[in-house]
Amino acid sequence: MPAAVSPAAELAQRSISRWPARGASAGSPTSGRQSNAHTHSIPASTKGFTSSEADAKALEGFGRQLTKAGIGLDALFTGYDVANGAPLGPAAAEFGGRAAGGFAGGWPAGSLWGSLVGPEGTLIVGLLGGIAGAAGGDEVVKAGLGE
Image 1 (spheres, rainbow, N blue to C red):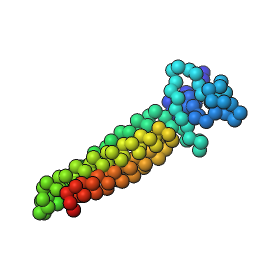
Image 2 (tube, helix red, strand yellow):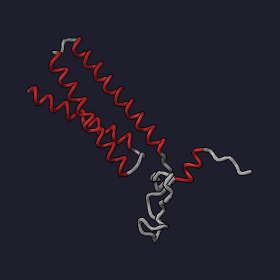
Image 3 (cartoon, rainbow, N blue to C red):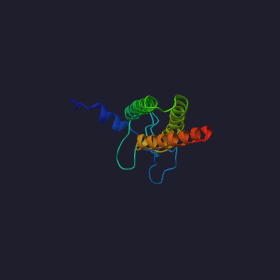
């Protein structure tokens, strides 16, 4: 009777290296790519870490929750500022600029990094892109308001 193989071990065995084998051209039978139509081409890191579709889905879900938490905290702090005397119009505009800028910076940064490199570091790159985009969006709105 064959030994039971865990789903993670089975996925690791089916993972595909993104780098061709030494001396093989991309697309050749020895390039490290499987031709089985039932498997997905999942890039693997050169450091021995094998990423999976489940890893990518988990990072995507965590990134979405992190986005919601960031926007929620910003809304809370904006509400606090308005409750303590800040004018509603400019405060709401700045909040909108930060939210739009964060999305405009974080989504492309994370997507581009994930497409080119894989899931390793995608969350951090997306987070940094979101922070930079939010800061930029805030500055754009402040310039528009004349501040």
